[in-house]
Length: 485
Image 1: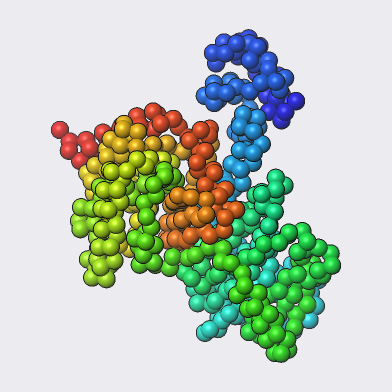
Image 2: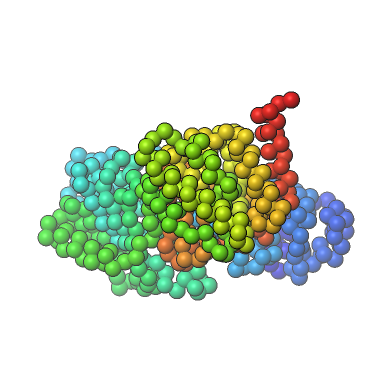
């Protein structure tokens, strides 16, 4: 029996319905229910499966457990495991601002310990070392350490919480056998741990380099102290279990470690490219060609890139000469993209949330655009853009899918724009911070690509028909509020 059939059998024991009665309620044959219980069949229609699950007495946690087991049985291990890995990665954006309330401030002086035992003392020392270096005018921290220990993130976030310009260079090992079934999701799991640091940094002060190896061999027992943390004052080398550490303060040793680190870091690849400001972002957008293939987009709102937005730039750009100069480039690019879209055969597929559409209509905020270049868009213009999307939807050029936020809590302010497997653009525009970066590592970007490309057939979205109907109703209500009778 599968995990799904075991859980279903357990839930049905006290439901008060016979298999025949349950079958009648959801509109299937009794044998179908029996096959699901025995593990020899799975309900293919997700809505019918949901109707069945709603008839069973279970807590919210039990309901999520059963639905998760159903998805595993319905879509297979490969798709289900990929969904879990990517959803966990995306959920890390929701907790970006969470900081440990017990974090220490900079100590007056660094303790003179030479050897440390136990993770509590080691992470206490890291907090002191990092905060002391971050307080310096030209602070610099070099790190060789895997990011999968949850407590490593806190000292790093402390650096950026201090509003420091301290430069941090972090070297990590990614799994070179990422195509193997057992390690396929290891790299995105490692990147997930770095997301809070990336989002809390001052733009461009935190750089992550990577090289490929077998992580287990990199951390094998013969490598006693594989991790190193280097500041201008000392070096701390740490065991892979964070239970032992040695601290060196001799200047010659510190310089030797820093030279060795820089040699390794220079030979590494950059994990992500940070787009530091609006100008960097616009330069990147202007340099991109509208792909001949289909465009996939996930965010709070649908993609605006192929729409007729040219006239809105003059109307809503802020009154700043420098901003207007770069926005002119963006305007010309969007006009060209719209013309190319009209002539081409590309199809746009966009996944978005109800909360994001309401934010567009009520606040005039488009998370895709840098907040520093435009004033809030009026509701009537937002309605026009949404109607344009529906018009292309009827022609089969623009496919729209609402994310079912009861099943998948999509992070507010996160935008993913992906054309191919080699890279993905990510924008995070929430919690009073705006970060834009390009993921360059192929195992991570290809997972995001595969996840989004198959998302329309997942149980985490409404159908296109349901989405269109909901959008039409939101537009109608908005237009009535603008032009009451």
